[in-house]
Image (cartoon, rainbow over all chains, first blue to last red; front, side):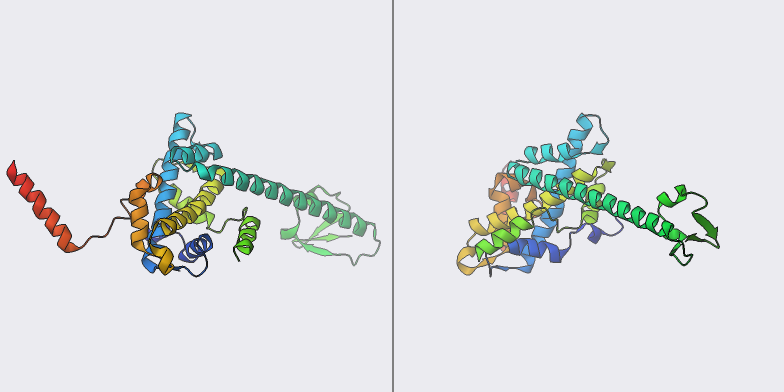
Amino acid sequence: MAERPEDLNLPNAVITRIIKEALPDGVNVSKEARRAISQAASVFVLYATSCANNFAMKAKRKTLNAGDVMSAMEEMEFERFLEPLREALEDDIRELSHMKMKNSEHIQKFSFSQTSSERRDDNSSSVIDSVNVPNIFWKCDSNVCSHTSGRFEIF
Amino acid sequence: MSKIKDEHASSNKKMISLPISRVRLIMKSSPDVSSINQDALFLTTKATELFVQHLAHSSFNNGPGKETNSLSYSDLANTAEETETFHFLTDILPKKILARDYLRTLEQMEEEDADF
């Protein structure tokens, strides 16, 4: 899977930023220490994965899920991470559903603007590339859309 | 200043700074893992960030670097050895010893073996 060993390292710039944020201002972190923390983080991922995988196997599942990771944290005695992790996941889910809501609003607006252009009588209305036409268009009435040389013209 | 930092941290709580794709690559390098659900991947990435913070923070607080305002490799190696939860790191964060001391312990071990 991993072609080069350095693919299994985490990006130094990000690790350095996280370390800086965790320590008081102006603390000097040696290059060796940064490298060591970065390697430790990779080992942490592997350790957590292996623990979580054990929980998944015990439950006869092939896919690691959130519960497995949480159980792994407990087993590794990182209980202090449980609460922040739970909050982060909740925030993430909330954000995702928010994005979905925005997307559906966007689609509604789009189809609304389309019906208003349908009502227009002039034939100089928008020409849309067939690539960008969402599924919704394929269901349009045949007398509204006509196919001309790979493009949809809406009258 | 620390207050500003706190606010910054809390507003960024839901944000993830480590690349999820890289974390997935590391997880998949484990041979018995077949597939990982999106939430599990998110949680592992977030946990890794918390881990980096925790390791840096506790090594700095336990080490002698507070006076000199610095964090060194030996602080990390000490934390790995002394703190129970960081024990799994002792293999990749070994304590550095002088070759002189190492040779001496080797000699001692040989002497002990010779006694038997």
